[in-house]
Image: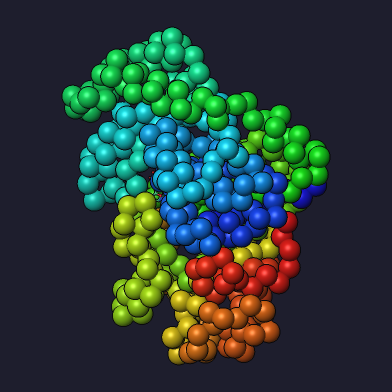
Length: 427
Ligand code: IMP
């Protein structure tokens, strides 16, 4: 009964897309559990180079049933564009299902996201502007529309009219805009509905039948644990829970059915948007990591902030998620460095601490305490077995394992699917 959750263990962009694409070849089902098109999952495989936002990264394996789960914030326009782009490149989507419970991102969610960010001024979060926060606000305030509503045009129109009028009445700060035109939005969404209807289902029994039958099921996370509203750097977080717990919830699988939780860590840290980042580098090394790693947002193109691996934050992530093991990605990006730093603790007001505070102003005052390790200064792109890695690269991996208390079962040494060292099966 292998059910494996693949969770982002830092601030997102850890390379989950590559890991899920790799593992999905063995899985009968891959479920995207939360988040929306704020996510950008890069997959490079024999079919090409893809940036997925909503479609599970398992889609390239025709025998893997791919599910957009109940916890996802679904922008139907973005999903259809993604499906069209996949079809244009010969990737089929007959193996895709959408939960009828997934909430719809509506045009006014995008507008509200922009207006709220602008109103925050210097305190802005740096959202992706995809309307994800406002969509989840409506979910929790019980005024959202869901994928299943698209299947009943009369009901959809009525719910949209009610929700739009209510929102308009309480959001006097949001300007006049075509997003408030109920007829136009209903017509657009009901067009999308015609194309999406074949994919929309109650997926809970389908998913749980697969689990009960002992099929290999992958749950794919979006964003990362440090962007979790409860356990991340609140308020500089996203609006769904990118933890293992959030993944089970969004997939409709009870946590006791989960057999393996694998956290994906990048060999260094990055963050997009605002918020504390104790190991951020503002120097030439940070710049070099960004350039060598092409650290620019898949969804927004924004330059990512770069820094050293933070084992304090990583341990927090291991604890919050209850990780069984980890995948280490982009180790090759460190190839050229002669010395590598790992943050092993923080100094806070003259005291050494080893926990990741939940208070941003405290995190801002934390100074990283580094341990220095030698670099390997050679290309590792061709390594396929752990023993083939240079001794300094193995020492880096093993030091991280000691600091985190979990084994790195998968190590990625390049962007291509085959540029991967698999030390143990996680599925
Ligand atoms: P939102 O999810 O668009 O509301 O953005 C909230 C915060 O999460 C911002 O700092 C975003 O940059 C960040 N964020 C959202 N999605 C991702 C992602 O997929 N990768 C990395 N950061 C993300």
